[in-house]
Amino acid sequence: MKKIFQSLLIITLISFLFSACKKKDVQLTTAEKVQGTWQLQTDIYHEFVSGTDYSDTTTGPNSTLEFRNDGKVYSDLQGQKDTSTYTLTGDNQIVINGNITFDIKTLTTNLFVLYTKQTQGADYSEETLSLKK
Image (cartoon, rainbow, N blue to C red; front, side):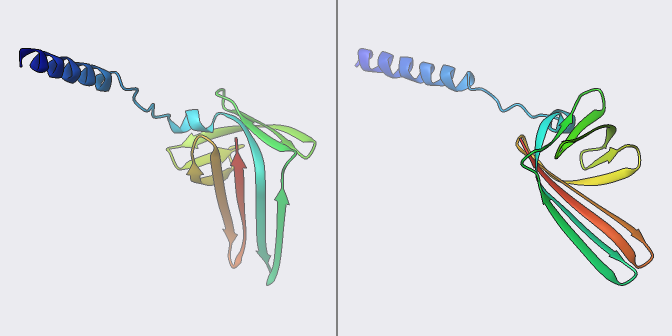
């Protein structure tokens, strides 16, 4: 009986030790999630001006956006390269070039969806960018 008790005690101690060593999920900040190179999946643009609708959807197998930790974003959109600045406004907005504010609709380690809408009276334009790593 003493051997059974010792065996159960050892098994219990080992199980507690292994559960205490369990890795914890690391929570990344918004800035850490944004940083890196993202591939454009779709760019959906819609515009309504003077009663006329215009829509365009671009898919981007050859287009990337690279957000760096120095506040710069390097874009290569179908061969057109450019460098801009970006800043995060809290966890739900990103401002590109100081004048275009995108709402962050989705941000995970491998999916980034941005949306912006600009209005002027009854006219408006809106854009949704879907990016993946």
